[in-house]
Length: 454
Image (tube, rainbow, N blue to C red; front, side, top):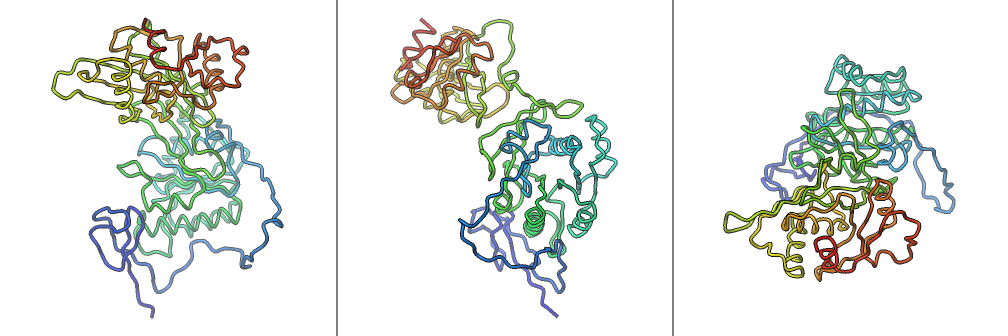
């Protein structure tokens, strides 16, 4: 009789230890090691490979490159985020907070793919609950099948009988493999179940979607190796109290990792937002001080976003500095540039900054819009909502060039803006005569200040 063997695994990073330790030597987290059985007397397999032929090394020149057609889904936002559609045999992980709409998004995609046979496996909800959601989003499909199961052995048996084109797992933390004796959601179970699904996807060329929980820090729950095993990691973000959701790519082996998809949560499901500027630029009756429009890029998509700033006299000794959706350290740097190079007394002012629409922007091209919004609030002078800007601000007060300025100008012209302020160094090799929008080129922040607030 084989002896049962146990090890201790870190729930945060997946590191293993033969005995319990208080602090993980790999990631430094405390009290994350749990005991798991790694060897049992008889361990049946959850997924048995049908290929018994071992692979042999071959020259890369002799490999025939076969371009497989991607599966195009009716959801244009998901197609963009995945890099042009679903790659056959890919393993895609979707994470997000509870109640953000992950299950709704996946069920909506399953029902929209009426020309493909889709198997939706749920380990958290009953078939009646899934049916209620399907009735609410008002989609129907004869090729969408539902299975409520958590054992990988039973799931692969049903998959073999049904032969679906796409497999959806909701969620990976609820699955259990007979190879492991630990509870569902543990490090060992998550790793083993993901490995079985990965082998299944690669051998059968069937794309698999995995819905994953996240921790309180916003990271995918389970070991970090889970994100390394899958082909793409998508984060479904947004405030549950607001209607807009953002699908962001953090890893993609078959496309860009900077793409962004925007949805609106309605009673009938998720609506695709083809024009993101409708939510990123607030609608108001008149001109208000402290606002400026910046042109940014998320992957290949240009966005026009509204920067909101509020500057007020500090009531305490230390002024407050708060930024929502923008790097607070970069905001402090821009405040120092405005005080040193522009002569604005901001050292005794409270400064609050907000990116409208609830998104987070890291593009340095919105530096100029941030500075203009702060000056506008400080001087109580409004900036025309028909003017947008794109430029990085350096420590010397210079306006630096940004990439793909032609896309930003074209997007501003399409949305009806009358003028865009850019760095004069960005216009090298660009024919500005083809645009119907006025292009103001500046090299110093002082030029923009005198132009807008003279």
